[in-house]
Image 1 (cartoon, rainbow, N blue to C red):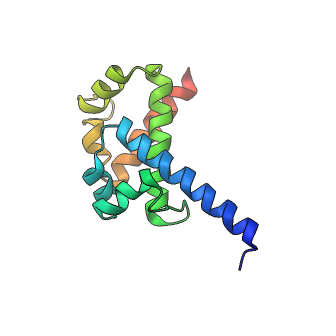
Image 2: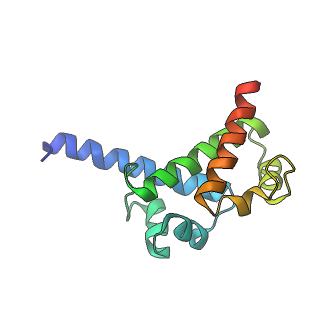
Length: 126
């Protein structure tokens, strides 16, 4: 059992991670229902990520997927320079290198890994 201060820090870290997941998903064009399905949560739990009503921990299976979504957002932001219109277009349009539409590819674990690897590889080449 963790001391009270360590437990509070763990809870705060989970709250930050949960909100980061919510924000990344929204910026990537995932609504509450899509995020819930992707993480294996209920729609209410997904909304709770934004409000603090549900805390996601990185070491869980849902947390692993959430961390990849955050990595995707960060890598894509680096590529598009923070331009929301370009980010949205990139997510919703066919990508010849990925052989698919990124927004659709990220619906599976393998597709999410593929998109993240592609973007992080592009970032590394810059």
